[in-house]
Length: 113
Length: 113
Image (cartoon, rainbow over all chains, first blue to last red; front, side, top):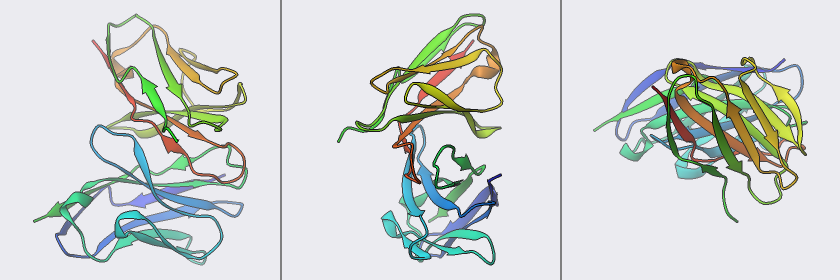
């Protein structure tokens, strides 16, 4: 069985501060992990993905995530928050069969000017 | 390459009615997944179709059904609408084999009155 847990349903950071959104996964098979972002009244947009290559993955808009097998984590970071980063962020996991994706409950990021 | 399209974008229905939502995947994608998103429940998986066959199903009542056509386009039907069915319905397409990411459409906002 696979699942992801996102710690913190709401995160607030000041503009220019570090963004850290947490995601822990559970998987009985090698996982493939994703971060998506959703802006109001829009669908989800892929930020980055981990598919067993490099453990540090760089995505769009300056985001990156590190796969840590020992900690079963895939936290999303960005060195300096921008106002435009305010959105809902979802972590997701699937296996190499790609049959079903399992999404976390999401983290709402607020950026304070 | 055109993205995932969903029609209609907005829909208002009355309790007891039925509704059909449509999703056109990215060209070449054979898998279509449907999700229900509400503020209280987050992103909940409805079902996934691959090559016209339902491969996975979430925990939704039988009022929710779907199908996929030979061109990979998919429809979702909800019968006997209830107030609680008001939500954003998201469609996502993927290759359906391997660990390819899902690409999301903009969603259909359904309001049941």
